[in-house]
Image (cartoon, rainbow, N blue to C red; front, side):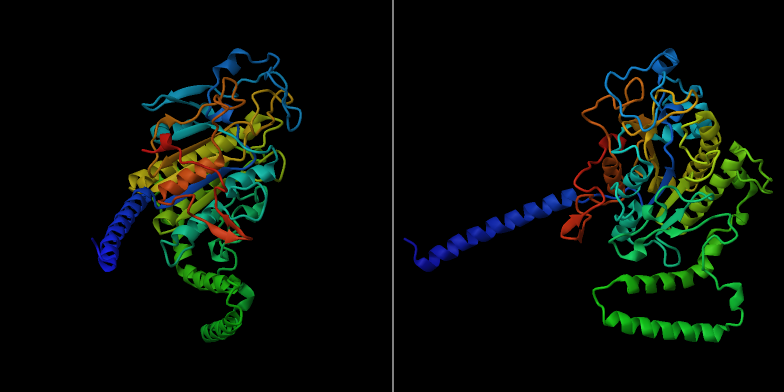
Length: 477
């Protein structure tokens, strides 16, 4: 017989052993759930206006075979405009590249040199055929404004790799912004220091307001220091009375970063320091031509090449996330990918210029040992229809489109997800790929569990992938 004390002592030890075993098991599970990072940096390439997967990356022999015949989708189709004309074959021929034999359009032939590094996802689906909503969905994970951009989440989760440069940099199209403008890279409910910093390589003033205006030459170095000191005292006093408001603290941090950038940024953006063969590889014209009124491939390669080379220089100096935009939503003839009237006219120069510059970026990162720790994501808001619109154009297609990735932890030379024979919808309609899956995979490669990266906002635990998303294992090396 046991006394009460002996009974409690014996059973207590047993419960303690059980608890210890449970804790060990939990710790083991936790360790098994830790994501080992494969990459440190990200480049997001965004083709604004909806690039045609059918004419660039997703080879469809059936469209060639049935070109000009009446289109039959086997179901009622809600077109954005009137793009349900006859089947339209790809504007350019496709050829195989690399050991993997991936077929690419002649319009993006320069990317053929990197075919074995690229992983394609041809069964992407969106939620809308409206540019503004489709762009927000791919840029922020939501098709309404008010949510942080992908780069903002990465900045918030991982912080900076450099004290002197921003964590998240945006390189817009030189002609203007895409749909939504800065809402695509705004921090929303995250602290505002995580918003994208706008830089325009090649412009007379690449970073606005980084240096004093020319009318302020009367300001001396001493008065400048004393002015900043007084402003800092006032800001700190203001912030002390509002401990829950992070906006002022974010602004202070941005001013302090701007002061440090006055030395670091000009050097990082000075591509004149690059050897001639590197600039030539990117398609940069040493003496910029007076471009004709019609858009042309060399012009696009020059503009895109300057952004891609600046991106490489920023990445190797500690910028963690670079977002590069091609195309804007202003002007005519079109200077974006929204080819309702004429795919050949609009896509041709944009595609070749993009491919030339991006191919150079991939190869340049690779030769410097940076590609293995840098993920590159190519995306657009949705695709274009396999039927014709007005004979030479294509209408919006949110039902299927293409993304591709390469670099840090991505298995090159593969296709994960196919579209159907027409490039109209996913081949397996029950298992499409969404932006949530792409974003989950991107975060996974950076060592982040997308379900655990959350911020409490308006009573909800918000995350980049909302309540969706899974890591695309077929893409992982």
